Length: 213
Ligand SMILES: [Mg+2]
Image 1 (cartoon, rainbow, N blue to C red):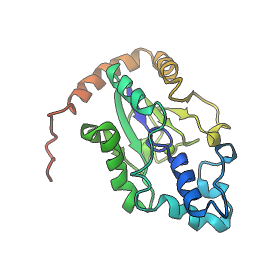
Image 2: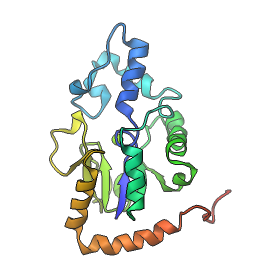
Image 3: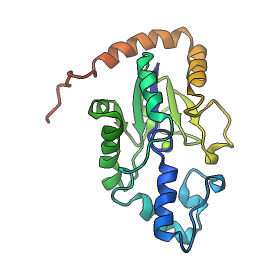
Image 4: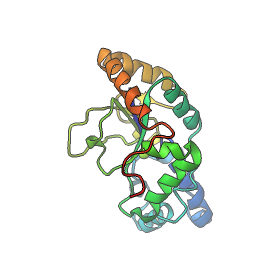
């Protein structure tokens, strides 16, 4: 299958990075919310409105995205998915304030998954325009300009527990991906063969024609 993995909250531990950075800067006055207190996808919806600028200042800061730790089990999971023949891409939406976020997303992937994996990184403001069988994303609802071709598998987080649908963690991913593949049936198998051919085109040593421009 062609599997799209969101980056923050699925591969990179955005929540932990935020809590650590917040506590370092503001923790003496206002401690960061505990994971169990996180009810909304957007941090600014969970903190008091008077703290909105402070919240944004944490994740817009230089170095924030670069230094996020991998989610437990995520890197191993990605490698096993690839070994099992899936075509795995990272599909991530940057902040509107992109200046630090975008280059640091690339740095993060290079550091934790290797330079070759940069060929698999898709940065877009609209994930519905990207093709795939599955999108694994912690955002409760992923919408955009088109009806998506992928099935949304929710990556479990405290702030998305109110949403129904297939739900994954890096502990149960094998059963979840297997079950979606079964549901998609022959279509996914045919497409998987196609994906493997496509994936071969971005294997080490192959360069796309626009490299260097
Ligand atoms: Mg996310």
